[in-house]
Image (tube, rainbow, N blue to C red):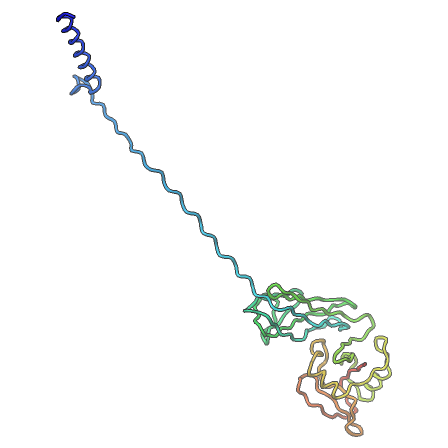
Length: 268
């Protein structure tokens, strides 16, 4: 290659190099009438972190439950009468428990009677009550639930034409106000000479039998008159004993046979 050709080639290379620099870097300043291009880029922001999960709520502590309990049912009760169970004592509770009732009311200890949910503690007494049916041979049932344990109390009304009775201390008793108060002689004659609920052989109870009945006191639960009741025991001519049934500590006393006093007949 001669020197002229070399110079031309070198010139082309320099021109190309300068053009590349101008294309990459742009002119040092704007030409006449041109505007400076401007633009701002937005910077990217990082993603937000996820939110933590909501903690679970605590569960409800279940009510303690007692040992199994039961009530004694009553049969041959009078119609439309308030029937109250005997007291029972609740055991086996580890703490206060919820108590609820359907078909009646309950009483814890000496608290007021209630049909609403409440609480009961270990060793407290409990009884329930309801009104017996208004028709013969009909059940009324009260259900009590303590914690998860339930028990029922049932009363059954007398059959049509029957006399209200109860069984206590291995004796069957007629209600003491089935008949109006009467003289001792008339009361004794009625018991000994009347067939009651298909049974004969009735009699007036003794002072000891009435006293034992009064201590257990079921009559107050069954609509008895709970007043003085004739006994068969003779004190002296013209005077027999009677036993006050309204309290558990009434003292047997004598009364003129002319009375009149309430009476109950018993059958062994």
